Length: 219
Image (cartoon, rainbow, N blue to C red; front, side, top):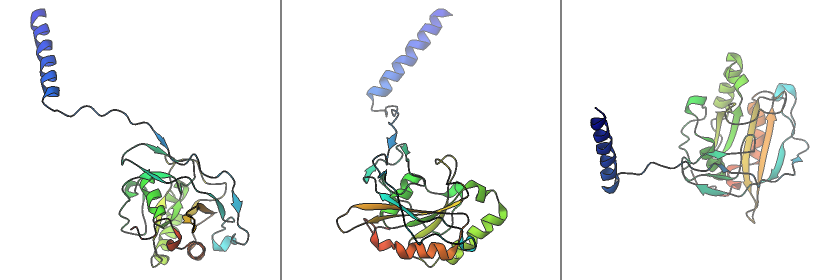
C-alpha cells in the first residue's frame, strides 16, 4: 500500500511538472495593495455661501482640497482610498459604463472605476447605508435621481461600510467632483448633506461642470 501511495504521489508530481513545461498558466501572485490617494492635499478649504437650509437638504458648506496624483493601475488591483468618498488619485485603467442615473450596492461599479469617471468629469451623489436601509429615504433619493436625470455626467451611487469611513455626523449624502485648472493642477470638491436634494445637487454641478475635468471628453 505504501508503495502505491508513493507511486501515485510521484505520478502526480510528474504530471504537474509536465503541465508547467507545456505552458500551463502559473498561479497568479497576490498584488500589493495600492494606496491611491495618500498624496492628496491635507489643507481643506470651506467655501462660504454654499451651505443650505434643512428644507434644501441641510448641506454643510462645500469643501475643497488639492487633488492626489492621477495614474492608472491594472484592473483588479486592490486599491484603497483615504478620501471619503474618493475623488482623485490613481485608479483602474478601464472606466465603467455608466448607463443610468441611479445605482444600488450590488450593481455599483468599483471605487477604482468611479474615480476614473471623475477624471472624465462625472459628478457623483453618494448615499450611505442608513439611507439604503430606510424605505422613505430611498424613495427621496430615487426622486432626486429622476429630477437630475437631464444633467450632464451625473449619477447617484451608494456608499457602504466596506468602502471606508462614515460621512460627517448628521449627514447621509455626499456630492463629489474632480476639477482641473488650466495648468492641470486639480482640486477635490465635496459637499455633505443631511438628505438628498435636487436643487442643492444642481447648484453643485453649476459650480463644477463636467467640462472642467482633466479629461472632459472621456465617456
